[in-house]
Structure formats: C-alpha cells, structure tokens
Length: 452
Image (cartoon, rainbow, N blue to C red; front, top):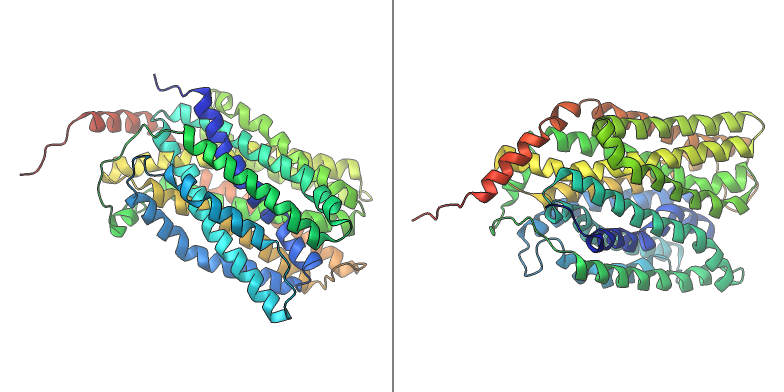
C-alpha cells in the first residue's frame, strides 16, 4: 500500500538533478574558477569558502525553523521548490560572473554572491531531503526513493561534468570568463524547469499536526537523538573528504599528471556510483543499512590508496584512474545512505519526544553538512596549496606538487576513514525501526482529543 508511483520517484529524482546543475559547478569548479579564471589568490579563495561556512552556522538552523513553521496547501517542504528556484538560479549565475573590479572589489563580490547562493541552496536543497519522510511512512520505500534521488543527482553531475568545461571553451573561444558567463544561465534555466516539475508532481502524504513549532522544541528533537548525531558527524567528515577529492582533481590532473584532457572524463566517472546506489535497496535486504554504509565509506578509502599506488608507480594513469573510479563506485552507497536514514532519525525524534522537526533536523543534518563539507573541503586544500607555494597557471615546484598530492589523496582518505567511526554505533538504532514505525502509525491513527 505504501509503494510510490514511478512518477513520484522520477519527480523526486528531478528535484536533485535541478540542484546539481548549479551546485555541482560550484563544488567541482569554483575553487579553480576563483584562482585560475577570476585571478584571486588561492588563500583568499579558501578564506571565502570558510566565511560562507560561518553563514551556514546561522542560516541552516534558521531555515530549519522556517520549514517546520511552514503550513501551506502544498505541504511543508514542497512549496519551497516553487518559491526559491528562481532566486537560487539567479545567484548561481551571478557567482560565476567576473565584473572588472579592483582587487578588494573582486573579493567582496565573490564572497557576497557565493554566500547568498549558498544560503539559497540550503533553502531549496533541505526540502529535497525533508520531504522524503512525508512522501511515504515506509522505511524500505524511502531507501528506494533515495536510490532514485541519487540517480537524479548523478545524472545532473554527469551532465555538468561532461559539458561544463567543453561548453566554457566552446562559447568562450579561449576566454573562460566569457564561457562561464554564457554557460551558467543555461544550467540555471534547467534548474528552474526541473524544480517546477518536482513541485507539480510530488505530494506529501505523511502529515504533521498544524502547530507552531517553537525553536526550543526543534532543538529538543536533536537532544538524545543519537541516530541523527551519528548521521551528522559521519556526513560532515564524508563531505569534507569528498569535496576535497573533487575540488583538487583539476589541479592534480593538470599539474601532477599533465593530463588536463582527462578532467571531464574523470568527473564524468562519478556516474558509475549509480551502480551501487541502485543496488542499495537489495544490499539492505541482504545485510543491515549500517554495514552497507560502512562498506561504501571503506571502499572510498581503498580507492584513495589505489590512486596513491598509481602515483608511486611512475604516475600510472591506469592505476590512478582505477582508484578514482573505484572510489566513485563506492560513493554511491556512502553518499546515499545518510539521506535515507536521516528520515528514520526524524521518526526517531518524533517517537522519543513527540516532536516531528523534519525541517530542522534535515537542514542541519543534510544541507549544513553538505555545505560545510563543500566549504571546508575547498578551503582546507586551498590553505594546503598556499602553504606549499602553489602558483596559478605556472609550472609547479616539487613542494607545490606535494601539496596537491596531500590534498588530493591523503586529506580525503583520512576524512572517509573518520566518517566510518560513528557509523559503527548505528546498528542498535536501526534495530528499533520496526517498533518505531508501528508505534508512530498507531499514534497517527489515534484521534487527538481537543482540549476544553
């Protein structure tokens, strides 16, 4: 009875495709754009990324409270696809414009556009996660929907990675500033259309009582919610590692491997993660969600070690690309599982406290972790590159190459390993899911007596 239609599944997939058309360009190319296209020093570019994370510390919980207070004829999460798709798309374009300003003006412009775009991304991406718990009450069906979401996400990533640099070169005719100025509006238009498609077809069927949820109650939904805490800590380490891996990749392939031509192919290989993302529901029937989650993270560590083996063996392209591909293959499970179990943590919070703070929990547990990871995953490598003497558009010194290797291989490897540690404690909470599901269904079916 709880099985969702394919229209709903593909509409849910479209919601993440929409966000990736802009955010993937930011995650993969913004650091490179700031240093090698817009001409900002690498340390300043890293500081801009960090500054945006301070904004996230404020905007993520604020958005979460706003979502939990939202009551409309379309539901709590769904209307934000309609309300924010245009502002987010517009600032996605502005982030990659290069106005002819003074050095200070460039820094201010870059910081403001990126921070506003990042705030709007929290506003429109958090509902993509929070709506999952409202689309179906069935934990198994949520895993299936998450797999479709990952398909949409990776489709957007594949499209961007296959086309972004090629379109920038094609439209820019050697002028990357002009190229980005033309390409980003194309992606932004796709973002708007896909969010509107998702808005039209997604319906929230698990309803929360219409009540004004105070901020203190939202915080109570976190207190003692150990499944959510596990997800938060693991996700934060994962995204720092994953974004560091992809943000330094252009530097590695251009300056270390001397194969800039491989950058589009390397990023396009992210699509292979769909194999494990789609098999995730089957894996979860075979073993626990915790084990699948750990297996994905462990696979990413192994992928980094294979890349290092290739570097040590005379920069073997075959070994490096094998490790890079294996890491992406494992990422399908490592990336998708937190989004799936986050809805279960919302149920856990409601079961434990009676408070269903889906917006607040997902704003911090998903959007904040993703954006904090994107910022720190770009900022930390930028600081490492600066400390090792990186100079844009120049032959790199041996010290600079060591900085690229440290940022590209070892920083992600350590991050993925740290992400495993909290997941080791998840099993006991996963075993409670059938009981939680049954008791919440009973509570929702029982009419609440009106107070005199």
